[in-house]
Image (cartoon, rainbow, N blue to C red; front, side, top):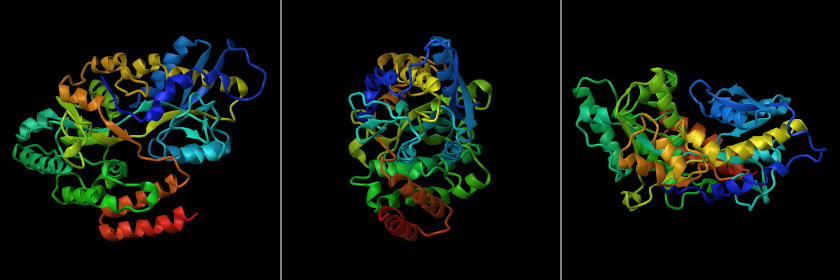
Length: 426
C-alpha cells in the first residue's frame, strides 16, 4: 500500500546507518556496560507507544534500560523547556511537532546528528538534530452504528467540507429522533482542528506570510456547526474538559476529525472498557473542493512528524545509548512494533501496513484502508524562527473566535496586525 508523506521522512533509513557516529569527542565508552537512559512521554496510561519502543529496544539491547518520564500532554513543551533549562530533562525527548523544533535547536538543546544524505524534517543549515519515528495524518473517524441509527449515508471518500457539515447536522437531527444524545460531530479544542486543515488545503495559504484570510471559511463552518448544535461548543468543551477520546469512544459524537495516532488509543480503550465496542471506520478528511475527492484522487491533509532528539547535557555513555536507541526507532522492527499497537510509524512498508490492519478491532473496509494509506500530508508547522510565535498568537485567535468573544473578521485582522508587529518584524 502506498503512503504519501513528506519527502523529508524518507531519509530516516539512511540516517539510521550513521547515527552511531555522532556525539561528543570523548573517548568511546564500553558499548556492553549496563546503562539507563530516560525517555520523555505523556499520557502513559493511554498512549502505549513510548513503552512499546522502550521495551522493544531493551529486548534487542539488554544492557540498556529505557525509563519513561511522564509529562502533561497539553503542557508538554512548556514543561520540557523548563526541565531543559534546569538541567533535569530526560536523555531523549520527543518533538511532538515541528512548531518548537527551531526553538529547541537554536537554543542548543538538541545534540547534533550527522546529516545522512540530507533532507530530514529536522535539518537546519545542512545539519540534522532529530529523527522521526511517527508520521500521523489527520483523517475522519466515524461511528458506523450511529450513522445507521440516524439513517444518514456514511462517508464514501468524496466529501467536501460542505458535505461534512450537512452530514453533521443530519446526524444530530436523526440521532435525536432515535432517542440518542450524541451530536453529529465533535471538534476538539486544538487549534489544529481548524487551522491545520485551512493551511494545508487552501491554495496559496502561507503561515509565514502573516496573511490569515484563508482561515475565515473554516471558522465560519465551525461557528455554524456550534450554533446548530451539531457539535459541542468550544466553551462547553473547555469548561467541561471534554476529551476527544471519550466523545468518540463513548459514542457521544458520530464523527471525529483527529490524527491517526487515535487508532492506537481507541483500540486500547475498547479493551480496557474506557471506550464502547461499536463498528467504526476512517475516511479521508473532508476536502477544500472536489479536485482531491474520490478514491482515484489523493486527498490533502496535514500532520507533522513526531521525532526524537538527544539531550546534549546527557553523559557520553548515555548519549551513545541514546543514539543507538534512535537507530532502533527509525528501523522496520520498531515500525512493526508501533503498527502492532495501531501507531503509524515514519518508516512504512507493506509489512507495517499489514501489521496494523491485522489488529483485532481495526476496520477492514476498503475506504478505511484507503484513508490510512493514501494522502498528501502537508506540515502544520513549517520550520522557521517565526513559526512558534505565529502559532502562539493564532492559538489565542482560535479561542477568541470559537468562544464568540471576538467577531471573526476582527479576530483575523487583529491576528494579522499582531503577526506583523510582534513576530515577523522581529
